[in-house]
Image 1: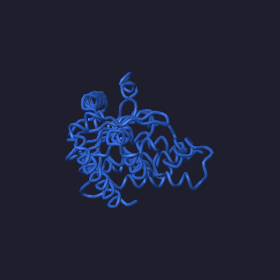
Image 2 (image 1 turned 90 degrees about the vertical axis):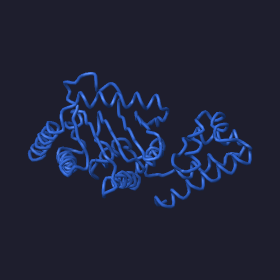
Image 3 (image 1 turned 180 degrees about the horizontal axis):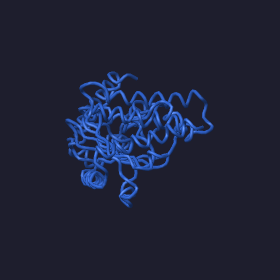
Image 4 (image 1 turned 45 degrees about the vertical axis):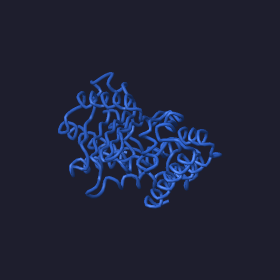
Length: 277
């Protein structure tokens, strides 16, 4: 589904939610109380500014006695085979963000991955998958990176743990190309890059993989990811804590200039390894 038609479908979701809510004689605040979100969030769902999580859509069905219609619409809109089920909602939000801040403790973030690197990661996670499945995931990951092109791209800040630079995902040649791609984006000021050095110690353990997203017309959101699972966080107090943790990571990381030099050195090391194999 193209982005325009997907947005139109979410607008229909919102209009249908408003109609069903009003038919039930409930205000946004009253429905919010029944589904454990604020009335403001209900308003944002109705305006298609924010997409509800699956459990919220299920509770809306229960509160409005709509026989599962909102869960079914949610699954149809979010079910995108390019992405893991737990990441699909975050991918939707990512495309609407005006600012993205990301910390990657183990792998290059998806928005920065080259095709060979993404293919190696996907194959490692799905060793028995067919080629068509692998390529579908790789294409989806590369399509996400389109948000970094053009004048309307989000402000993007990335912190990589130093370990990310030394793991030859896909082999030294693939890793060298990947690091050079990151350097190219940083030099063109598509992103601000920092590296968290190994010497920073426990800072890398504070959050795990973390993505913070800010929007023009909706509250900020955080996304964390573990093995085969992801967690989209929008409770204001929790997001505030995640933002504070990211600020600490920024403070502990190398400066952007020193970070570029370290990535350049790592790319050279990978090129050297590739030439001797």
